Image 1 (cartoon, rainbow, N blue to C red):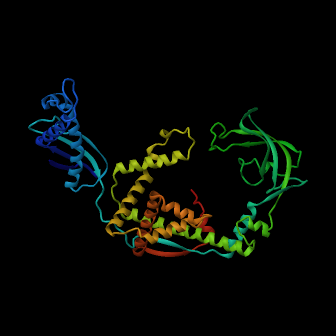
Image 2: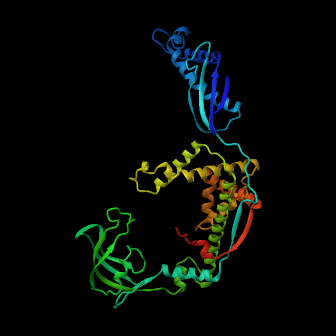
Image 3: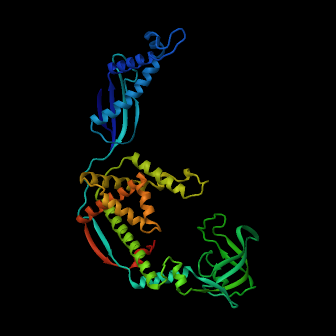
Length: 437
């Protein structure tokens, strides 16, 4: 077998492999001899068909099958011989010696991309800001108030509606005097100030009492999801059935027990809230730090990435998005360009992280894997059941091992990076403000 490799552009390689005619002939002969022992033909006993008869009838078919098998095997042998690391599947076509010839043999050309060869870089050029934060009593107070709001009760009152009240209404919408789909409801509860309706709808219902009726005008936003309504001016006929005032429940023993606190004490509830908040906070801080580390690795390692791997990642992201969309959605509407940037970054990061793991011989420590699984399970009602589930599913456990390896890489990078601390609050970490456009 003769092999020659040409670098065409970037990571693309063109490999030509020539198969000697004697190798082909030998494989064809062996296959025909084996076939002659089992071939059945009229006029001959099973296994007694003369070899020359079998050869005449089946040689062309057998030679095609042998060539296919030899091409596959010799491709992998050639890749190992040349110490190449293909990324993705090769494109294989017949070479100049396309015809199998008893003198010249057969050749094929395999075109493929290879993984980039590089020395991964991570140093103090990576800047990481670590949030310095803890759960305060005031944070727990806020969470208690949110829990009370989740249990908000509404009671009917005989007065005009105000912000925060719940009103029960009938409404009928019209565009240019014609009713439209989705613009009608009966006895629909609506909390004023919840912003659950389009802008201008709720504010015009403040000051109404039970049995009041009025017609209001609103305009749907230009970017409204239903295109036939976007930017349209609409009239709504409103009839109020009830006005209800909100009441927050007191945190009595019975109410506290509904949150899973068996002793029904406020101290027990606060302790449980603190535990959950600290776990969520630690996860959020860890993710923020990890994101900065990974961004730094991408910036410090401007490597070429195989387009085949990017294409695979694009398809994976498209499929994930399609799973979240209605069943009748058309995937062809999701052009590759929508995913290319993120897919390229993910592939690049994956290659850098994998190279760091390999060169530093980082292993997924069994104790670290166990700790990660138990941490994930701790937020469930029956943690042991979750632990057993992971250890009973090799694929799920493999994902955890991947996370542990990433954490080990993060630790190594942090040791070399420039790390600073920045005081912040629980609210800012859990609910970061969206930067203005």
